[in-house]
Length: 165
Image (cartoon, rainbow, N blue to C red; front, side, top):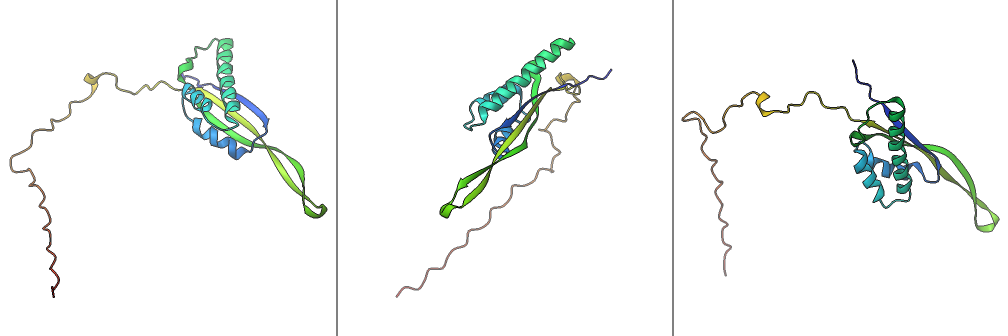
């Protein structure tokens, strides 16, 4: 019977920050454990960091809720940030006054942030006892005459003294 790994998501849409700036914080937490990612988001000095912290908390709460509804045993300590995306949202077109009665157009960028957390798989192939490993050869024993001589040092060259008057 195959174990199904479930992914739990949370989204924050129409955030007033450019996707590039949001990705700076998301790259810090991608692939980390949930507890470590929450601490990183809490202490990051970016304007979007509290939003990402709240979103990550929401994804963990979604995982707890869905696991409880389905009767699945969920270990919250083994959750990690599987996916962290900052996609483009719609752009707000704005106009700024310019000299001589003109107007400059600029765009305010919006971001859709998607976070998904999943449970880490238990590593099945790891060795847990030292007795299960094959015996390694001892490092101290060598045959007589096979030891290498230490490397020779290069001779220092003497500089010739210049002529004195």
